[in-house]
Amino acid sequence: MDLEQYFVKSDLIPAIVTEESTGQVLMLAYMNRESLQKTMETGYTWFWSRSRRELWNKGATSGHLQKVKELYADCDNDTLLVKVEQTGAACHTGHHSCFYKQILPVQRELEE
Image 1 (cartoon, rainbow, N blue to C red):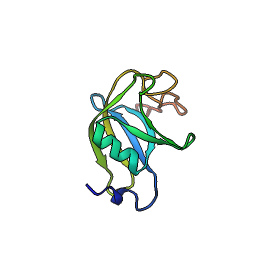
Image 2: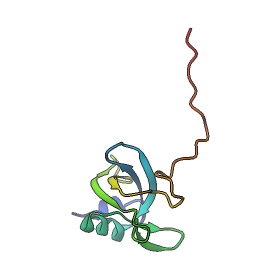
Image 3: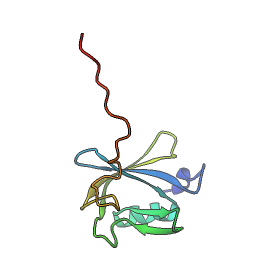
Image 4: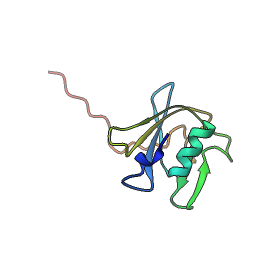
């Protein structure tokens, strides 16, 4: 498969990671060509760390691995959706999802 189509706009592509069984968004990370290739070859998520400037295999040190179940590109080929089977916490803080900080409460319409 030609991966170049996903890197026309940038050398990094955002990857939204969701839990296959629940649909819960677990995290957002970035992939470069090499990490996308390694993800496809190994069946586990690999990303490019923008802060450390290196490849990282999610869960390699913590044991909280992400087994890839499905992989999608959006309509513009500039964002990926990775559906995974998550082992343990996805977030480095120990939370299951990185999205645990609610900043706006749900607003409900008043019934008339």
